[in-house]
Length: 196
Image (cartoon, rainbow, N blue to C red):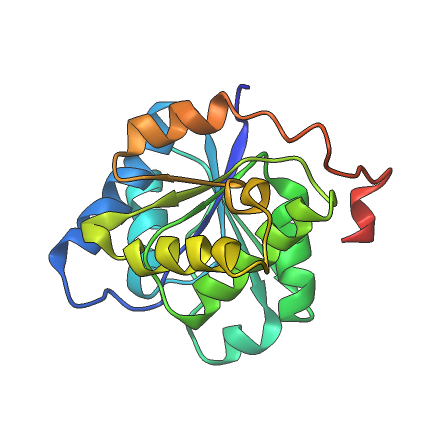
């Protein structure tokens, strides 16, 4: 699969380790170098700002999608290729999904977790058939992988549902695995992504 655009979920803070910002910077630069447009939540703070700035500095194109209320908090990035202002968080997530060929989660907090699990749930239900990657910087997401394994072991998830998440600690390897991704044949399909 050749990606035109990838959506990156990540924190509005930098986190406690310098590795997190370094990974966000590498991600933005890598997308630009490969001619892949970055789609993200439109913020200018934390890892969100780092990944967007790195992509643009390397000559890439960045589309931000942000709720109007967050502009009032002065966290919207005004120097992007394109900034789309929407009416709600729900609209923001649906729009980012509509624009993107796949998703990658970098380290982040509740918002990042929520965005990641929502696109995983949409994939499980067949609302989209796009790859979902997890960049596990400094083992930040190791507990999450253990949680998913526990969900399978305890009978709340099928193994194929847990395997919808492509996990890696190296950007190039992760992007290759995402490019090779094929949605499970058993996943239901929808006719129109507007149902998201």
